[in-house]
Image (cartoon, rainbow, N blue to C red; front, top):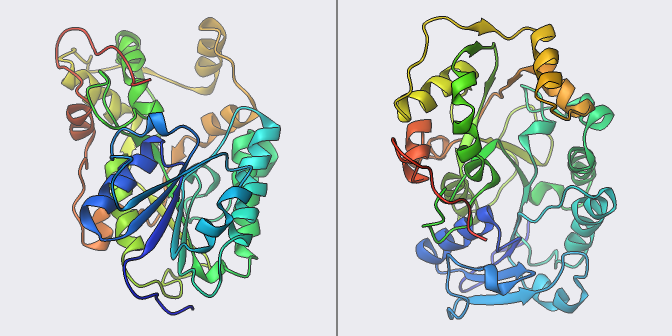
Length: 343
């Protein structure tokens, strides 16, 4: 392990204009003396922290073209790599696999202390091991994240890497009245509430974790400002794996929480969603599903042990419950839900 440099740490954050990236930058700016190197494509999207702050340096460019920022990358003591891509297979491979290798190549091993690498909990099983189905059935995003994790486990810098696996991420506001970008999940709340008339009549045996982007930032800021050492997690390799999420909630419980928040009556009995009925609804509602979607439907329970909310590190969660998520997202309990996410 390299020795800590004297003076304030230099922390590079990729994907710094995204929802999670901005929460992390804001937290570190407020709660550390670190100098932040923010790698982003569009400075105009930076809304939660001032671009002209003396402890912020903007590195404007694409993750696929890191050459112009080689010196800045080599000067980083810590890296928080949140940037990612999905949708286009070629771009996903270039950003999620190739660019990660190049980013690590450009670091100074004599200076670099830690890399916090963002993946997704979807590629892990209950015991935090890689799901074989991630490579077999996964979308281009899932497959490239699985490939990158395997590569990192064999990388010379593996002992300095903390891989974090966020679960379902909330953040920002449904009305755009928040300086942070709105996460896709929070932006989707408006549509989700539109289906409560149907969802309240259905029952299914499934469960999941969620986490707010502010709580992701709390954990990452803690990791990035404390000494990095060998992986303390039992049963893992050199790369530390942390699934970021709150305690699991059931789908039935989540629907009940949404109904309670919007003051919608929940019938005492409902229709059990079995396989044949799910298939029927997919056809009726003309929902497009791929092989990964079908695996997820069969899997049902996306839960992990251990899971790492801020409390696992002696910290306090910003949004430990779905009710807290809805309140912080500005979801009204009556009337029209906000206009949507920030542009």
